[in-house]
Length: 147
Image (cartoon, rainbow, N blue to C red; front, side, top):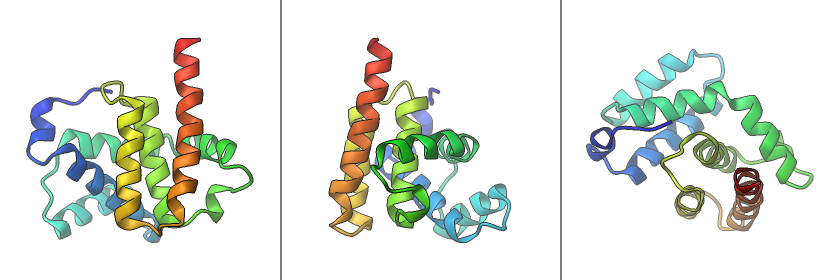
């Protein structure tokens, strides 16, 4: 999936990722609500201008959630997504989606940005876990692309 540069320039990519992370995290608590409603109210509450990257990534993660969670479960060495903290789970889902579906974003960039978000929003003990899972997934994806 590709996004027009001008859609990302209104807010920078890091801010856009943070907005998607916030949406995914909020979705964890509002499970009974329609995702479109969560999306609209959350952006309005945070006064974030909608753009294609935020919309596409949020709804893309939601659409591919089973596939993303399956990959996270496979690489989390005994941890199921249901046992992973909501913050870590949201970060993992965002990064895995970008690595799988955002061809214009290198896997290393997605991984590094996820770790930066982890430093800001998650417990410091979560960083090695998130980094390990994402590195393992990245290696599988890159191996499949090169294989």
